[in-house]
Amino acid sequence: MKQFVRMFGLILLSIVLVACANNDSKEEDETQDTTKEEDQQDKTTEEQKEDSSEDSSNDLGIESGNGGFLWKVENEGTIVYLQGTVHLGTENFYPLNEAIEQAYEEADVVVPEVDITDADLVEGMDMGVMNGMYMDGTTIEDHISEDLYDQLEEFFTEYGMPMDIVGSFKPWMLESLVMQIAAEELDYMHGVDEYFLERATKDNKEIIELETAAEQFEVLSGQSDEFQEQQLEAMMESVDEFEEDMGDLFTVYLNGDEDELIDLLFPEEELSDEVDEDLQKEYEEYMVALNDDRNVGMAEKIQAFLEEDEEQTYFVIVGTAHLVLDPHIRTLLEEEGYEVERVY
Image (cartoon, rainbow, N blue to C red; front, side, top):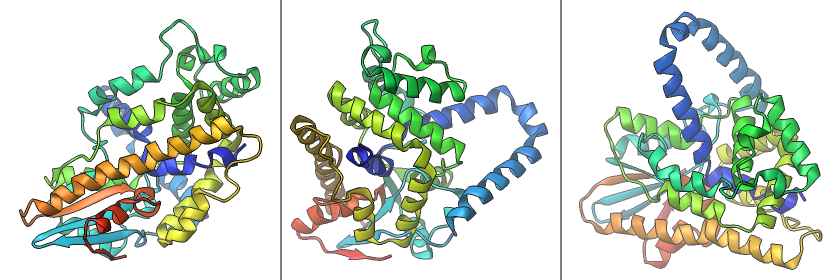
């Protein structure tokens, strides 16, 4: 069953907006409400973070100066850098490789999937949140097996979140929440996208989104109840191995090996015999919506940048799967006649 949703690795590469946005909002609220208290505890907090970062990051063997998956496309005076990202990471990631850092510095425009640092993002998330909650008076207990519900109750209770708080969430939203909690516990909330977007804001670089939060949430929420339950079940089965799985993902990402990344995320035995034909078909359709269809839309916008003839440099930051899993953005641009060069 775990292999059925090994895709959660891909989700980490493409959508963790709930985690990032909630984390940002929480930090802003805490800064406004408890500034004096935070100032007093600043040294202690920093020491704890450093200790936590050392424990998790050093155990993973992560060092700054790495970070693979950078390509370059040119058309006359316009340059587009394509930087593959992971939306989770450790502080030890940064700075990334010199070639990547230089590409960012050269850029006039930073182009994420969605600007997760934008204050207006919350408004754009409303549709996704609404699609992630039961509005008919039922709760998650009415829609999943008793065993899975018991696992959820044990997990959320451990983190001080009784089921009456999260019980109205649908399986896909609970899966994202479980992932967020696991990531925060390990201090993995230092994603590559956020790293560059925060810098772009400080550097007053223009930011242009490739997608909207609502579009991304529509992909996550559009699956059947049975399919969502399977995903949630697999997440719960894998949560104890989250640190190990993320360590593998971080290592492969920083090494920049395309084939190794694909093998990690999509092993051949991904769909087990336990999964019936209908769910296998839905899985395939989901992957098309999650990767293929979105790649077409993103590639079209990137092509528009190349054809604007404004001689600007764009730094595109998207989940790495969108640059390595066919039909990926690079392939789609090459089909339009552009030469895509690997930089790092």
